[in-house]
Length: 210
Length: 210
Image 1 (cartoon, each protein chain N blue to C red):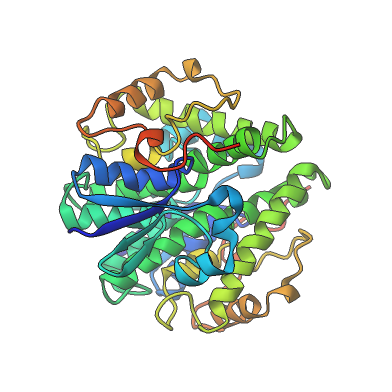
Image 2 (cartoon, each protein chain N blue to C red; image 1 turned 60 degrees about the vertical axis):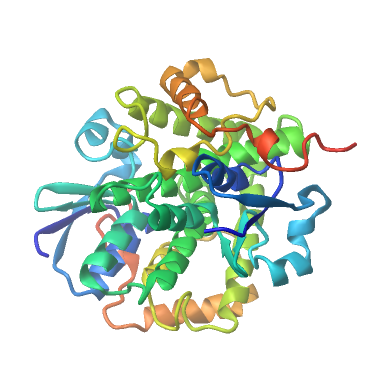
C-alpha cells in the first residue's frame, strides 16, 4: 500500500484523522496542500476533480480517490488490520462512535472553532449554541472513558483516531478541558502512542500567512 | 430474526430510519413508545437501561440492545442482505453517505425542525444558520441525484433509508423543496417502494397531546 497522497491542510482535523492513521500505521504518504482559506474546496475544479462534496480529506491511492474520513479510516483498518475491531461486534461498536463523532463530537467543535478562530465572528447566539452542544458531547464521552482507556476494546482503534481529530488544536473556543478529566487523560494517552504527531507538524499550511 | 422491539417515538426521524428498514424488509417488530417530549431520553433510567447517549432509536432483539441508526442499519443490511451494498466498494460508498447523513443531511434539518416545530423558538440566528446548512446539504444531494435514481448503485440501500429519515415530516421549516427537484423525485421514489409507510403511521405518539 504505497503511493498515497492526502489532500489536506493543517487546520483540518477531519484530514488529520486520516493523516494520523497513516503516520501511526507507518504507511508512506505525501500531503498535497489544499488552500481552504482561499476557498479552494468550494471551487468548481476541486469539486469536479477531487470531491463533489467540497471537503477534505481526499485520499489518492494508485489513481483512485477516497473521501469522508470515517469511510477512509474504515477501509484502511479493514485492509491493514491496524486500529481495527477484532470481531463483528467491535466493528459495529467502532462504527457507532464514528457516527457519533461525525454527528456530535467532532462536528460541533469543528464548527465552533472555525467560527471563533478563523471566521472570527466573535461570540454570537450560534457559537453559544454550538458550545452547549460541544459540552454535552464531551460530557458523554468523558463518562464513557471513566472506566476505559480507549473508546472500544481497551486498545486504540479508528474510533479513537477519528475522535482525536480536533482535540489537539490550540485555538481558544471557550471549552474548558479541565471539566473532562477522563477525556483529557484519553487525549494524553493517544498522544503518547508510537507515531503520534501533532496536526500542525504533519500537514501543510500552519501558521496561516497574513 | 424475530422478537424485535424498537424504542422510538413518531417524531424521531432517526428512529424512523430503522422502523422503515424493518417495515420494508418485512421483519416483524413492535414499537416501544419513548416519551421524548417529557424528557424520557434525558433521564437516568433511560441512560442506564437503554442508551447512555440518551438517544433513540434503541433496537432490542433477543435481549440485546443496539443503538445508533447508522450502525443498526449496517448490521441489519449485513445480516439480511437487504438494502445492502453488493460489494466492498458499494459498502464503503454507503458508509460515506451514512456519515454525511449524520454529519450534515439529517443532522441540521432535524435540529432546525426541532427548534421551530417543537421547542418553538421562532426564527433566531441559530435557526437561520441551520437553514443555510440544510440548504447546502440538500443542494449537494440534489446534484448527486440528478443522474441517479438512488444514492448508491441504482437500487435502494440503507443509504437511502437513512437519508429518508426526516424528509416526510410535514412541519414547516422554511426549506422550499421545489428548489431541489431531484431530491424531491427521490423522496417520491422511496415512498413508492413496497412496504413504505409514513413515520406518523408506523411509530407511536402522533399527534402530540396538548
